[in-house]
Structures are given as C-alpha cells and as structure tokens.
Length: 235
Image (cartoon, rainbow, N blue to C red; front, top):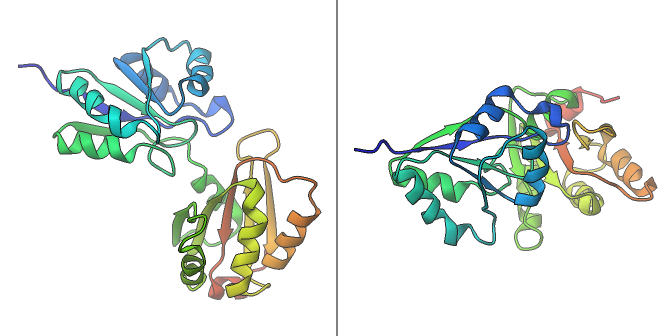
C-alpha cells in the first residue's frame, strides 16, 4: 500500500534571500510539488537556489478550487511543499485551508521553522516580550474600531501588520482609545537594506508618519499595554 505524502509548510525570506534555511532548500528540492502563493514571485527565490521542482499557484482566489486536488496528490504518496510570497505560510498568508484539508484527510503536516516578520519585530522593539498577542491585519471597515477598542485594553504587547499607506490611519484610530502617550513601535522593511525601527509615543509616531513624503515597505506595528507603557520609555 502506498505511503501517503506529507505537506511541508516552508517559510521563505521576508526580504534578505540569505535568510533561507538549509533545511528549507533541501525540502523544496525533494518534494514532488511546490504550491506557491504567486509562482512569479516565488520563482525568483526558487531559481536563486537552483530549485527546479514543479510549481503550482495556490492563493486566496483559487485555493478553494485547488486544495482538494493537492490533497489527492498527497493521498497518492506525493510530498507537497507550501510557500507564500514571504514569511511563514498561514500567518496572514494563504495556508490554513490546505493545512486543514490535509489534516482532515489524516495526512502528516510538517511546519519548518523560519522567517516571520512578527518575531524579529517583537524581539528588537524594546517592548516587553514575555506576553504578546498577534492581531495581524485589522478588518478594513466593519468591526475595526470595536476591535481596536478591545485591543488597547490588553495587558500584553499587541502586534499588528499594516500596509504603509494605512499606518497613519491606524495610529490615529488607536490614539482615539489609548491616548497620545502610549508607547509603540513601527518596524519597517525588516531584513532589507532600509530596515528601520521608529520608537516612541503614539503622538511621536503620528508626527513621524506625517513628516514622511511617502512611507514605504511592509510594516509591523507594536503597541505596549497601558501598564508597560507607563514604566518604560522607548528611545
């Protein structure tokens, strides 16, 4: 009887191609198929490491239709790797549906450790790291303010993902409920040549955003709890 295949969740660099692990490269070379969020974006990385494994796209717009076909390949014994454009699959990226379908089919799922924007941002933020909550992207409209109101009451560091053109709006909305003096951090372009951390109060970060001709790059935004904000001062 054919042994079922395994689904490998393989993190990819969030910027610096050197952050790819040896194990990740070996895995992508050994599987029968690599499912990519965008085959063109992933092609740059795969070609850089000489990975010639067949590829297929799997993203938010087609995953409902393709997940079952990929699961069927694994049932027949093929190993499959899933990668997103950057970071760890399933963390604010496609991946959950395929992972859930593989587990429902009693297949093995193996998640490799590797690149993710939220952990480096937290570690270097200067905010407490012993307890934190990852919110990811807030809903763009419905329920957004209600969720922000809840999160500013957290006793843990709160981590958001946000696009550069909306970071000013996010800070302004948080200030409505948290006040101007809450400590926070903008972590921008992590692992890339223009990596930058901007630390200070919400008022100071709002002023920094307003002073930029254009904020660029992927952003991790970190908010201190009220208690921790009162006992620390970021430089």
